[in-house]
Amino acid sequence: MVRDETANAHFDAVVVGAGLAGLYMLHRLRQLGLRVRVYEAGGGVGGTWYWNRYPGARCDIESMEYSYSFSPELEQEWVWTEKYPSQPELLRYIEHVADRFDLRRDIRLGTRVAAARFDEAASRWVIRTEPGEGAAQVSGDDLGAGAEETVSAQFLIMATGCLSAVKSPEVEGLERFRGGCHHTGRWPHEGVDFTGRRVAVIGTGSSGIQCIPIIAEQAAHLTVFQRTPNFSMPAHNVSLDPETQRARKATYPDHRRLARESGLGVPVDLPVKSALDAEPDERERRYQENWDKGTLFGILVAYTDILIDTRANDTAAEFIRAKIREIVADPDVAAALSPTDHPVGTKRPCLDSGYYATYNRDDVALVDLRRSPIVEITPKGIRTADAEHEFDDIVLATGFDAMTGALLSVDIRGKGGTSLREKWAEGPRTYLGIATAGFPNLFTVTGPGSPSVLSNMMVSIEQHVEWIADCVAFLRERGIASIDPSVEAEDAWVEHVKVVGDFTLYPTADSWYMGANVPGKPRAVLPYCGGVGVYRQQCDEVAAKDYEGFTLSS
Image (cartoon, rainbow, N blue to C red):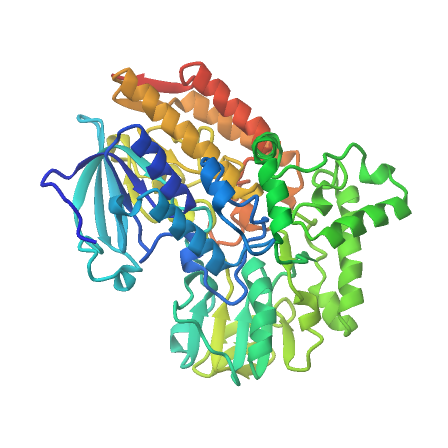
């Protein structure tokens, strides 16, 4: 596609990222008549579903929930094939949206935003780009791919995703390994054939739990290196029949409203009883019902106090540990796979398809890194404190620098040349998770301090995009050049996020919710734990009061 470029590289808005958030942001800003440029480091649209192509990659929110609601025609016409959509199906959906709404003409692929500086005199952002990781995958007719250029925009909107900055393990020697080495978050587009090969997987978070059963079916032998066991529940994934889809589509308006008003972005029946007030048999039945349903949040919302009371939480945790002991034949392996150091739900809960049963295979082994930590990666494999293991391939399922990593990978400088990295040196500071003081006209979609990763991301994305678009419309109608949160409003929000987080069990776990998976990262509850519906009301109240807590400058 040949781009129609003008000599004047000035835009009303620049959006960083062409995933689900960036595409919708572009669509909404276009509806306002703005001139918009989207930069995407990848070679195609899709964000997390462009990069995460590992075996078994799948969304853990049901497809008919994890989809756009802004277009009734789109949601009625698109046909999903599975309860939990796979990466290829999600990417097809996102590409369809890009084509249906003619979004590609304003997207520059294979191009990374390297730096952005706020010009205080002009009240505009000056943005510098460089070739992105996916530049080589962009088709030859996309003349702008990988360009080094400098442009300006009144608004800079970061739609970079909460889980997009990949994290490698903190071990020496990775570059010395002579075999194949692949991170789940940057999987080769051509795929990887593990047939007849000795494979290691490092990590048992969501990506590891999804890919391990699939790789085990291919490999001659699979060894899983686990530092922290995770709670996982069966997805019970099934094909979606036409009648199921018709029934949901008939109620979509009400269902979407309930999702927006809910705590998690998914309508669920709210509990009214404490787990500690229920009889053991009653609890067992309720947990079993949710286990059989195959839903991400089911057990966590079975009772009112699962995520706020350790004793209540342990009733749910012990139910899952009993399931692990029931599934895994070797008692020692079952014990190693059973989490005992964090409450259920305080690390991202997982859905799986045969994960625990995989360890009953003769060609699968588990290495408990708490007993025998990795010392180094060698040319032939992995050396732990006890032994050296030889492999043909190593898979790094080691996750992401969540919520802040992608934002801080760009050299963003606000008033007085202060960098975002400097400002956030002791932890992220935002107002509503949308803006940060001293960085006028900078918006973060599902940024730290918003519900984001504790919710159905589609609901949170749409809410942020719509709030930002409404804000931009408000400013332009009134001729306002810039909007910047006050330090006082930001301080109050940061404190509110902390108080609400401290009321829960999340701070008791060393999780990426807390930034604990990245050495040296400040420890803080990164998402807002107050719930999607409550958070939406707070954001709407701020807007209704002419953006209370923000300084507006003409």
